Length: 385
Image 1 (spheres, one colour):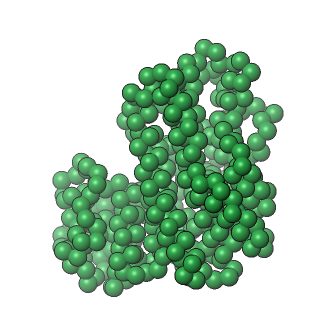
Image 2 (cartoon, one colour):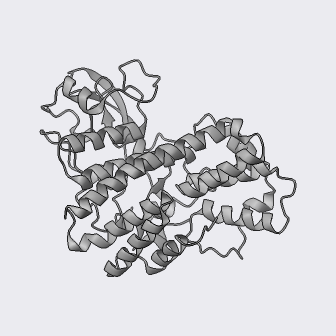
Image 3 (cartoon, helix red, strand yellow):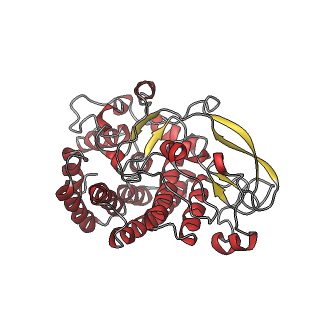
């Protein structure tokens, strides 16, 4: 899917990670992390030529050679004084599509390279300012960040090989400790959630062969989108494909596809776009229908859904506190209400989502696409999957 449909809508939510990298200020000497200056301030669109370059690629749209976009740079920890190398973005990759909540889908998972993490202490900062002196001590960082929750393959320290979401979680915890404000903290939690989502579709995972086998087993016509599909072209490819599979199944097609494979394919499609409630439903259907619950793919989808939910709830709580504390300007409240509504919806909190979509609708002065608001508001009252 091209990006042209997106120009006045979803970028109102949060700036893309590319914008964050380019515009965001560093972690200051008093350790207050800063999100992009225009957190709810308007569109952050890539150049037109990059939009055209990023035509959608079905199913594995993020799998691209990384060399044009990634470089290895040397850094010195401002905490320990030790040197290490880290991968960072050499240039911003083109974005092929966006989710309803504004999550970008670049040709590589650029969120994984947005922040640099100290492998010894877990301190994080943007690459351009990582080496600047800070006042934090190692013992203070341990109290703020704790120990890593995930195992890593690196041997340079406990945080060596940290996942993208761990970097953003550390940024959120530093923002809270530095009293940077609820919106800054919420931004980092939300980036952590997005990085978990992009990891599903990004390739290079242990379950990739299971995904290939799953979709290879579907009829060829099931993977070619019908022109008669009711969903408009602005809907992400995976969600349109999910609707088509369900439509074909309802009329008796795909009789040779095992029920658990069918359900697991739908779970993957919804999971790749961060539709958490639908993912949980179809994972449950897959588990009940057969042995899918014993596979690597099922386990990964289930655990990643839970992790994104955890981060989204943290982001939602922080944005709600920011709303109530009056941290938003009047012209930012429509976009912020939309962001809060989408988090509620993805977490399955439909009643709250509907109330916040109504709030966004009432405050909207053309910043947010009205058809999009109406569509998402409608999803609060119907399952849609």
